[in-house]
Image 1 (cartoon, rainbow, N blue to C red):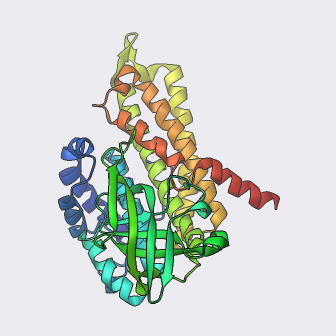
Image 2 (image 1 turned 45 degrees about the vertical axis):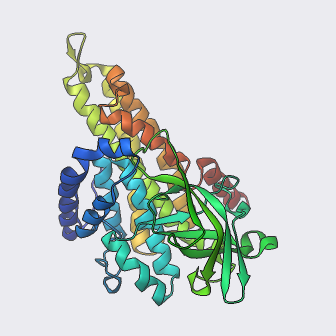
Image 3 (image 1 turned 90 degrees about the vertical axis):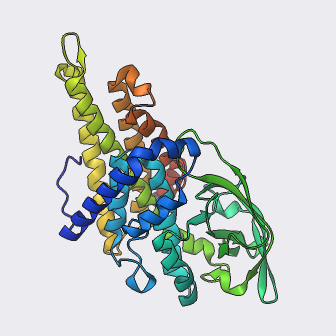
Length: 384
């Protein structure tokens, strides 16, 4: 549990948390190992998640959502972290915190009404198509193209590392519409995966987050009507930069919640595990380590909650989000690694949730922009 008081959440958030926790304990925890073996969250579970309000809870009521604030999204990720279900949390960052947000902020009324209600119910699974084999954190280098021909675009290219890519019904795709313009020539499109020319490649095998569906996707001369353009032509890169702070805070808040869960597990373990005739927790070296980890997490938690407040008050700036993503994911991974060490050999066994948290958390420092890119953004802003 967080080591510092939290004053952000209302009674409504707390009631939502209780409902989500019950759902996770009933529908996720007993079968999570099966999802990892299958490499995906079953579609039936997406539907059930929609029924309890777990999907895109901040979508306004006129589009089928609950009309909550971003703190409801935070509750979802915190409760999944508490249960050791980081894979599902990653799927929902793409679906809830990125795709639904892009549609609501940039979409036409017709696009919102077509896609958002079904995203809320789980009838439609959303994915974001940015990363390519030669363009990960450097989105200006994407090669996927959307060529304008009369009243439509022709989409060609490929994307990789796409969360929800194998089961997605719709993908928000970044593509070059003006090849020679660099970042000023990028546009976004809402691509229905049922369109001719959409092709899924292999399901990617990852080190961690094994229950998260991740795939390659390909576009072969897909005919996109002009009304699939999301936002303005050639303004997609700017839109991504403006909306990416939300994604990075979603990653940071998931990371710190996973580390808090790991510390809880470690504390319970060292209280009962006997070594040298006493519980591990009675050793001064262990007490010092737990104190260090709890303090590091308390500081990270305060920063994340401050950023969450800035999101709901619409005052979050790019620099704060970048700093949070970089710093909190570094701290969280280090904490989880130290917690695994406290478990000794048992921490390396798959049956213990700490082992899964350890491999699952490593990717936080990579996706959403690597932490090296985050440092570069911060440094450029400070030294300009």
